[in-house]
Image (cartoon, rainbow, N blue to C red; front, top):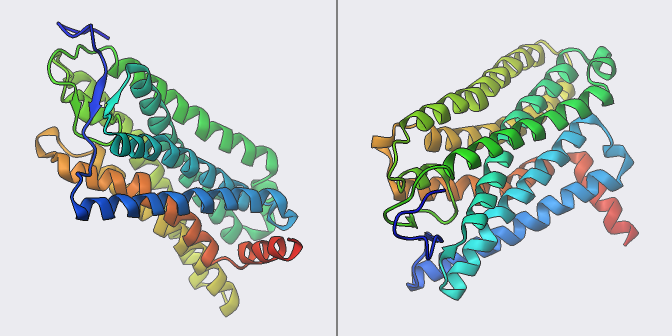
Length: 308
């Protein structure tokens, strides 16, 4: 990365989202509470799925991967934000910024692909129940899960390499609470239009293509569910699918709002609020949405509590 007249202090400054007014102090405390709940809930989901043999199925394995990604995602942004707010030191080193970009983008991309894999799993389970174990065997399930991590990691490497190759010769104040790529591009004094076009293409691949697969899968699922003669089967299928679709709607909606809008229409305040929604709030809601409406998870939790 090139620096003009600022080689003595290349650190960036994270402006954050909170000031020290009573209202913002309350909101900061609320964020810490949400972080704690998200950390505990996702950790619990991963442990329950690992410990209870009844949850050793492809669906719950994929759900454990989602919880692990959410756990890592919220730990990528919130601890640094909290440290900066409490200590008053808003600087972040270039290496720290690179690490945040890599983990944030990698996990973001991996979740996009994982949600599509989860939709395929539900499609096979509901539309082809007799062939489920052959069409969604453990080998294929593991291969698809690993692929989501690899594809996300590749995207993270590309974004870090490209973003940190630009020159930053003006202000180093990032209008975000973490090192976000669009916010960093505003600080560059070199032409980033080609890279912004590349980001848009990546968003089409990582957002619209998986979303199209999800929509196709659930369209087929809904048609199959409507044709079911069993009321109990319909209820169970709708419960599982609505949980997944709720997560998909929150995640993809917020992500497309951030990354698929023209640069001229961006507002730092809006970007901060929406980023906070899907990097802080969504990781807390995901395990709650899946666990509160899932009897198997509730039984596993009761079983663990009973043993204790």
